[in-house]
Length: 109
Length: 116
Image (cartoon, rainbow over all chains, first blue to last red):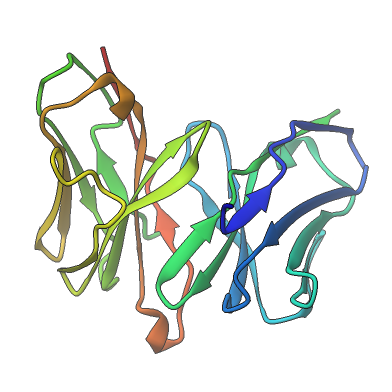
């Protein structure tokens, strides 16, 4: 079993929709939970991070962590065509980071 | 805007040839990572360095891959001999040691390797 599981999609939504992206994990020692966005032919870029359980909001993006269920989510409100990318979740223990395989999102104008 | 620079951006080579990929981490970052990305496996950690010392290269096939950091401004990943199954995008990322309170990496744009 992989440390981090993520549905690869693809996910296609109309502009303005609310998007929900999710990951599950198996290691209860994970401390930081991150979301990276990767545009085509580019490297991943850090979008948001959270520490431990709870919610964190940044503009149209909300990251949610439920450590009891080992489940993390990223919500995108009022999605825009520029949000079209692959979203990777990541989590760490110490300097070891574990990435999901990414969910491909397309926002249709 | 600080960034991680990787060269070359694209590389096509024949099976059996040596391939060297280079990475210039962000100035001041003391941790450097090499990842390989494929559609099937996603991002796989190959090796990482802290303060230029290799800390973990367990994800790397030792018989053909080697990673070095000859100085603080250069990290290299070498494959010799290359095989078609090595075809992937190789990313370098740099960051600060988590113990300093910083986290998350900055990725380069990757080297897209095709071995024919």
